[in-house]
Length: 72
Image (spheres, rainbow, N blue to C red):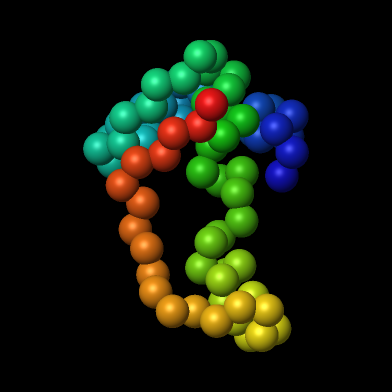
């Protein structure tokens, strides 16, 4: 999904509130920027990894859990 589509679909303040309820803290330069990076704007990482493994482009060896994400 493009950044423009994401910004139209989600409101940054709603994304911040929803993630805060899950214990995830967001600090962004703008609420539009937060909307552009909403979790729903991205493909499901498990589906991408499974498709890559099935196509034999790479081999699954471990599953990682993110602890922090810094974008800038």
